[in-house]
Length: 211
Image (cartoon, rainbow, N blue to C red; front, side, top):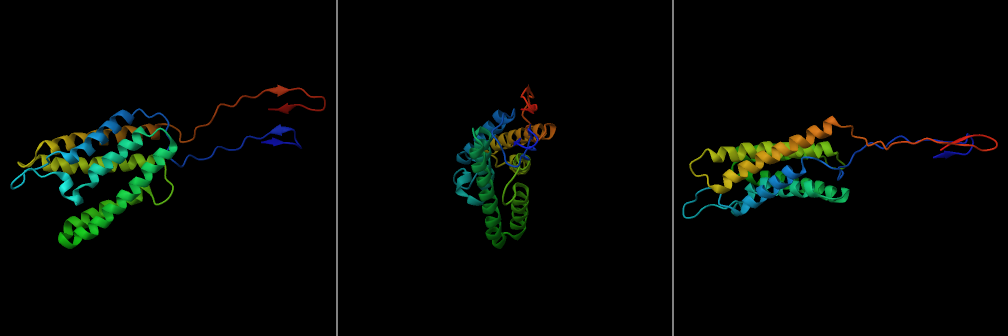
């Protein structure tokens, strides 16, 4: 900004980075592929049923981990800040669905419903209701990856587990690892990208102007 009275150029302070961007992140390949694989597992047999293998899409309350995988794959591959913010909106919608589903599940199985309500509330608290930071998004990925790894790890230890559970466990571990790398990269770098400043002096008859 040029100051006519003093004949100098003032540099405005940088704006604090508050929204996720599409800047290069090394985690993206691992996070994206893990999210896609996790979502694909929704169409694979998970556990043995009475007459046929049980598919995850047959039980809507069990869908959130797979849907979160799809959202994080989209965020990892987003090529613009707008695409990332659409992913953030999807995270809020999924957190709302988890909370709503927990209320319904509480009527059938109170302990399970209470746990799901706690998880949904925590996810809401991490990503926030309005505005967000890339660190919060990465933190949501860590939370989802950890919970999904524990959930599918439990099913993998049972005798009823099928291919879908094992692949879900592997992809959840990949999502957790990718999100941890993402979070580490954010914490090890400044949140503000300050452009390089170049100063030059230009002579004028009455005074010098810094540009």
